[in-house]
Image 1 (cartoon, rainbow, N blue to C red):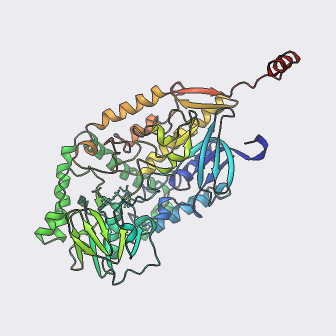
Image 2 (image 1 turned 135 degrees about the horizontal axis):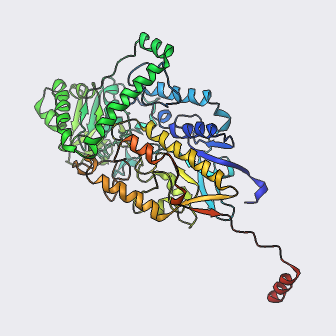
Image 3 (image 1 turned 120 degrees about the vertical axis):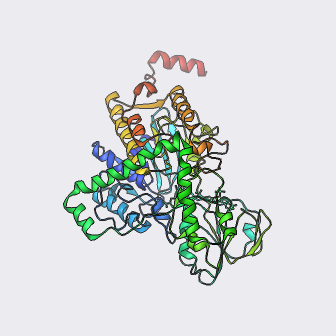
Length: 511
Ligand code: NAP
């Protein structure tokens, strides 16, 4: 790529969900305005734009599931719905004047590190550009995963994924199959049960479901939050503190979670009177091993006469007939896949080619790992927001995102201090050291010992997604960039202009 022919920016941010918008705000705060946000869709919002399925809401309270630098005194409910969270992100984009930086419909197709120029070459759906630093904020829950089911391509009815809901399709009176029992499915089931003629839930693994303390936030509360902003902060602080205290049970003392299982069982008993159905719905692994789900309406919906639970995974499709692993056959008109996302095999990793010519996907074939959840060896000046082992089992991801943005801010400061054309490439030893410490702590956690298989674990059974500690610990670990953990890369010196002597020598050699 010739130097003059393309646009060059200091930072390219990929994605405009919580991570991407947060990164943009943080860059502006650092006085950096030479950045673009590359967004594949036509609107901001990331997963909160894409997941518009009926009943979609967050299971982390709104006052905690929002940026600390953009508190919203007007959250309508304790657990907000998708439309309100999406609206909040639109509001953040406006308030922080981010729109001029956003390039919509600009899906990133390829990213290549140029070791001579020390910049990233970026191919997007709208053309090429280069950037000194790339912040990948595509998020782990952005690319829907549909299992490879034999016969799916021959199914004559309607098929869609929870994260790509077809709002044109009328479910009224239809025979609908819901595949999966994750956080998405348990919200969809009660939202569509009344509409569907018959609803069949394919449950490979029953989830633990706790009651959801959701309620409207009163006008008086909202007035108080508007008049006295510190009350919003206090509310947030309380929500954060409670969750911070719970972490030890998940990370060090999973047996303590046994008491919580009793509450979840009581939640089921209240709604499901049929012992045979209760038996099907009772998990056989430690609560917390998979994400703990919150719902007051899931079990009551399953107890309705137009709902069947097939306690087995979907294994084959023959025409309109869905065949479960236990042989059960069910005829349906529509299939909804609530089967999650490409988390440990993020498609963006396949599009990033680093200094050694390997893609990030290739470099992560033994498992995802990144220094402080952010940077990968061989991929200079490339940072992932919500990178490996930064997910949470019990609290708000926004806390982790903000900690990573502190790291990004210091990273930009360090580059500035070093001066000139410079890049930071994490040392392999530093990445491995960090990863070994994380994996060592992981051994005792409920996610590894609880007896379940979850999307937290990759194909090798290694937990490369969750942070095995408190958000405070992670915040401390990402406050500053330790330049000692990086190789400082300078642009190779340009060969001196050939002197008459060297020119002559070259001519002789060529002859
Ligand atoms: P998920 O948690 O990955 O769940 C996927 C489900 O599909 C699992 O129950 C899995 O069964 C099932 N499945 C896969 N293949 C199947 C097959 N052939 N037959 C039957 N079932 C099959 O996906 P998700 O529900 O979309 O949630 C992903 C994450 O998004 C959540 O963990 C959460 O972090 C986030 N989320 C949050 C909210 C919220 O805040 N309320 C809402 C939605 C999503 P197994 O359990 O046996 O693997």
